[in-house]
Image (cartoon, rainbow, N blue to C red; front, side, top):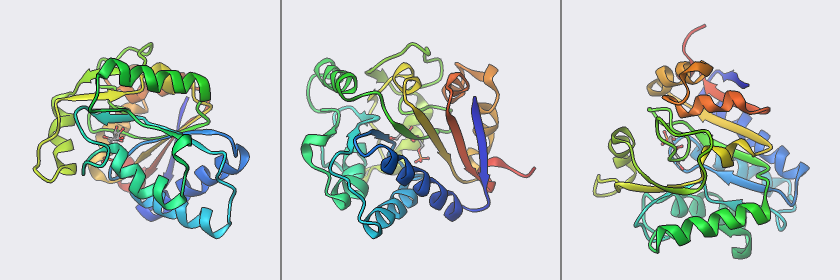
Length: 240
Ligand code: F6R
């Protein structure tokens, strides 16, 4: 089931999500965490870093695996998922390089995908996946029509993903291809949290809560998961 949980404001959403991630990290100090980039989780990660530093939590055993990346970007490229996560989480928490794996988006895509898939098998299962939802319902770069059996791969990005994704890039142009964990990889996570904030997500949040909208709305695959929560603020969820 994909259970909705509605918080009144974006701030309350970020606080709730940060507390949930912190709790998972404390329960599983050697756990594997898969975190989305994007605008939605930024405030959550800020609060998470604050909480973990304040409590002097033990972080040396935590591991992090990439969710997705725009193909062709250098590791420190503005707009990239890796650079975002390094800036918001990996850097501020001082996570060791040996405990993170990102897609090598400059190299051969097959090799990059194999590396991430191998690491997921070696380090997995994913303890907690923190995801965003695209306006087209995508999870990671699993675009509308993706099979539930999909695994790590190179994908041609949907036109909505490219149009909306332009906001991340200084030149206003998003790459055409992406690298992503598949829906099957996400379904094997022990727990999944999907964050949705703002009115622009309202329509797609509604559709994601209907199991029959899969595979047109990839996020609806999470109704097959045993512990998936859609955390939405009031603006994303709409009035009761
Ligand atoms: C990013 C990712 C994407 C985003 C989604 C929502 O790593 O996996 O699926 O989570 O496109 O993006 P924002 O939060 O910018 O609305």
